[in-house]
Structure formats: C-alpha cells, structure tokens
Image (cartoon, rainbow, N blue to C red; front, side):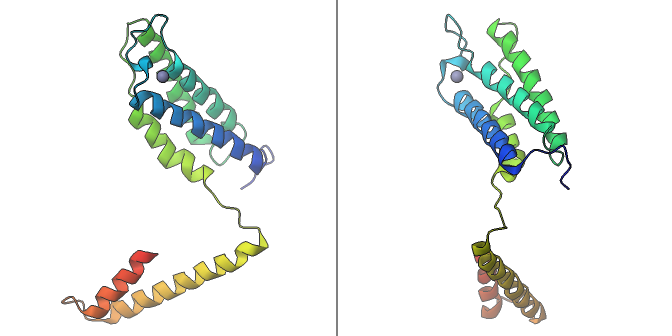
Length: 169
Ligand SMILES: [Zn+2]
C-alpha cells in the first residue's frame, strides 16, 4: 500500500509521536488544574489554543505524507481547528470552553496510538517470537476445537480449564 508520495516510516513515526504529545497535552491541561480552563487570568492562559492549533497543522501536514491514514488525519485537522476557533471565542468570553477531554481521548486511543505503537517485523530476532505466537494461535484454536466437541451443558472442569487458557492470550 506504499504510495510514492508517502514519507519514510521514521518520518511518519516522528509526526505521530509529536501529534500524540500534543493530544496528551490537551488531556493534561483540560482535566488537570491548569488556570487556562477558568479563563480568569490576566493576561489569559492560551495553552489549549496552542495545542489545538498544533494538532490541526500537524495532522494536516501528516495527511499529505501518509496515504493510509489520510482520511482520519484530515478529519482530525478540521475538528482541531474548529475547537481552536471556539477557544479564541472562549478567551473573549463569547463562547464556552469546547469539550476537549473525551474528544482528545477518543482520537488518542482509537486512531493515534494504534498507528504509533506498531512493531517492526523485519528483524531476524523477531522471527522466533512470531513463530511462537503463530504456534500459540494454532494451540488455542486446537483447544477451542476440542472444547467445541465437549458437551456444552454444565460447567465441566475441562471446559473451565480451556476457558482459562484462552484468557491468558
Ligand atoms: Zn493549560
């Protein structure tokens, strides 16, 4: 799926790491005790506006570098910019503080982290662990196949054991 316009893996990893850091800053400021959420300081604290704009520009930039993740990165850029604009109104006391904690958490957990915390599989040392995990899959499905042939009524010890085996994986 690599298009010629895509940047290197290291570069995309850096973009995602920086984006993740900015998203986590939103969560820290918004759910912590930062004076920025009270908007009572003079001059006002603008940290949330800064992080929102960074998220918008970073995800817009990353979208043009990563064809696989382009769609959600563009959506994130738009949503972050909308919240940045609302934050500007909040500073002027003409708008409420935008809802940011759940918004940031959702993007972090469902989009950024799954793409950032990925593992390289090329290294020779990893071949063994990949083979081992494949073996585990085979064994697990074997256990399931056996369990499927057992009577399903009642809690027989054998079924209980195989269920516990499954939960370890
Ligand atoms: Zn703050």
